Image (tube, one colour):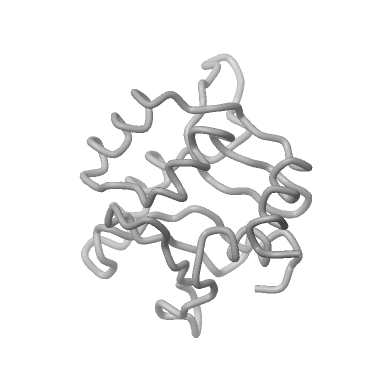
Length: 145
């Protein structure tokens, strides 16, 4: 089974926030000053954000102010990361997930069709962990990063 097929299976078995609108995606890009890769835009448009067994992928979703959010918001996560790390990371890197301890996984928002995923944390200063978004999701869900 290809990464693309595995990707679809993993996400279909996960809990998603529901589709993000084209307007919400465009507003997020404008607020962050980036252009999401086409594969991540497609993820947002179909799933919004995802919580799977042992992993999550940040995205966009409607929030209820009376309850804490179930998913991580890509805009809030990116703005918080930028405040904390400042210029030590390129402004096009967006934190989309983490290992819950030390590592944070980032995509590069440069408007490309797909994106590589890199990790930052102790001993992982921009280490490439996946050549594509689909590969990353499959590896993340299987615990093989």
